[in-house]
Image (cartoon, rainbow, N blue to C red; front, side, top):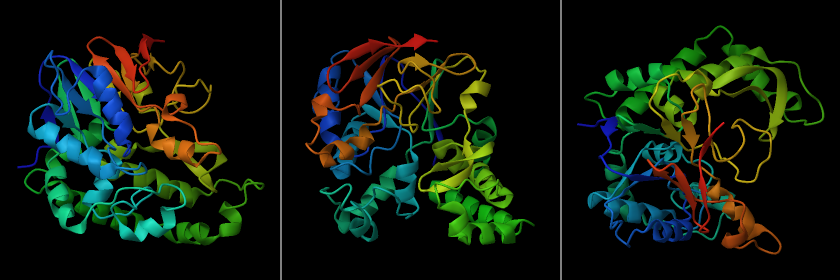
Length: 347
């Protein structure tokens, strides 16, 4: 029976951020951490991945194959990220041309070349991936991909029991669709969504479109699996332009309301090691944050290395500002694939 919340083993851990198909970066980091090719460690440390092992990078199949053999040997564990969930529910999204042929033509100018997964191997991938949890925890640490949201966690504990993850996910999708389409503002949403002159011009800020805002707000919150793996939205006072359109909701910094004593480690939010003094996550880039300074994002944006490969001239992995990182626990030490290390701090 599927268990969305599972228990971490005792002992020291190395918690690795979103890999996004960057197999070479993963192998370099594993060597620096002291693991052999099977994920064994001489001090019996265990690996924990925060999700998003796949998409965008050059070799998602190799990352997944490596994780599976290390998992089956008892050396590695993972929580599902939003990119794994897209595979499970057959939802082709950005960076998934290695798996979904219908995405390949759209994405070859960005992410190719990539290693594709043969069709005959996909069912086995889905079967074992569907057993991976959404949460890993023990008394001193919690691991989740994007957001620790108590109400959504209660929903998955009761809503998935006896049904399996994929079935429950699709049922929540159907319930969400019905809820949105029967809302009194839905007709206004369809009209606003179709008005490209309203949303697409970066030089003209539109007034708040309340129906669009309501749709995005509720869509982010009424599907508990999506909420935990993608985060949730809040309304904004002023529209902002991002992703080639005007936005009326933005990501919610849930950690500012997290008051439990147990630390939480997440991925998902594309942290930058180069200080940029903007964005959702606070500076410095090695800091714990949140109401109790006990939430840490270990995603240092290695999934953007496709930009390095497209640059003129190309940027080498050693010079890249996009990194793969591990948080050594309980030592609170960061180690990067380029060999650098840094202590974490509580701001």
